[in-house]
Length: 116
Length: 115
Image 1 (cartoon, rainbow over the protein chains, first blue to last red):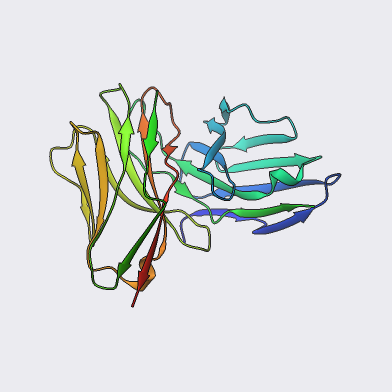
Image 2: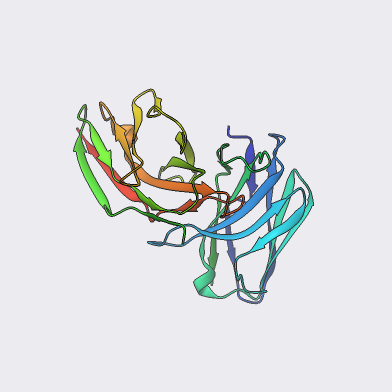
């Protein structure tokens, strides 16, 4: 149990569907992240939230919409996705201590998304 | 530019042998941290070991050790006495003050351990 949970674990959706991925952490961390992991590609950082404020949007298409209502919860709202968006979506959290470069990111188990 | 390079797409090792997974990094930031993660086929990323740029000694965690060579900008992971359960994808990652709060990951190395 890493303390970071993600639901659902698997999701199949059509291109016209709207769905949401949920991430929850109970570690008291203040930073939360969405990553996309496609086959044979490195992890791609999508969004970063620090103290509920979005601090990074890594040129992600608008069909992905993040939401961070509090430091413990992070959502990724999906709409009109494309088949190439099929991937493993990983959520992570971390305690950031000012300018420190310590503190590992804790990852959730991921949501494996298939877009038909 | 901040970058992590893992040049070994796949590595094969027999049980009980040691294996070294290579990682080189690029940053001009004097303050940085280096991480290794393991990702089994289930998909979850498992933190293994951390090395800070100012740490004088190489990090060790059980069977994992990090061979940190600062001048060469390398941070290789050494797994001693490999086990079948070590078969997984391994990612090297870095965080710097310039990169902000997110880790930068390499492409990963697939390790296969056979009996």
